[in-house]
Length: 292
Image (tube, rainbow, N blue to C red):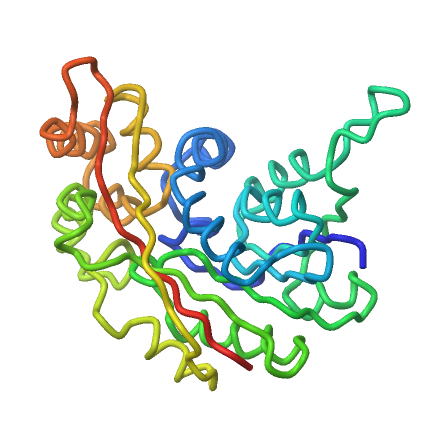
């Protein structure tokens, strides 16, 4: 199966791996900020799941909301065959760069595999992969960041139908709010966006969010875990850029100007800034393994 990246047809504003054409941002620049600053914060989550499920050469993985492809790259480095689905064209372009071997060095294969990029959805990914059934689906983007649970549910139902029976579907989300230092910062987005009364942006996670989503999608829970995912940045400006790249502040940017959002975001980050200028916030993320 040729690893494939496919543009997701759903618009899930506010989630990692999302794209909303009305969002007030430089898409290319923000996608680069996501890839270079923010996406790596979830590496401990990716690694914990892959270790638990023994991801390797036998794995045929479909990543929903794959973003700029870091989770796919890690799986591919373990020998997995990977396909990615996402709504954000700019992030998918970066994923293709990451997952395409460097042909400039003769006799060397410096990338996991050649990737094909196409418009479509999970069904298109399966078709581009030669019709081979997947045996692992991941949806790592935090549930508390997804504006359309109905859309995500439909996407999971479609993806589950493309897997071998009994295959794991992994859902990711924020851990308890009291164990996530970033929650106090993300409340800035929630407060500024309140006049819109929008369903987008960030909200605190409920204890059973992942189980409720699995139930909506007709999946049966089969284990869960918690992983420390601290958010660390080299400077305050880097932290601001990284957090803005998530899309969680888009609703706030629709209500007020970017300078005001950046000012309030910087103020909220100040308590987490260390004497050397770095920013550090301890967080716990949670994952649920469900079965088709």
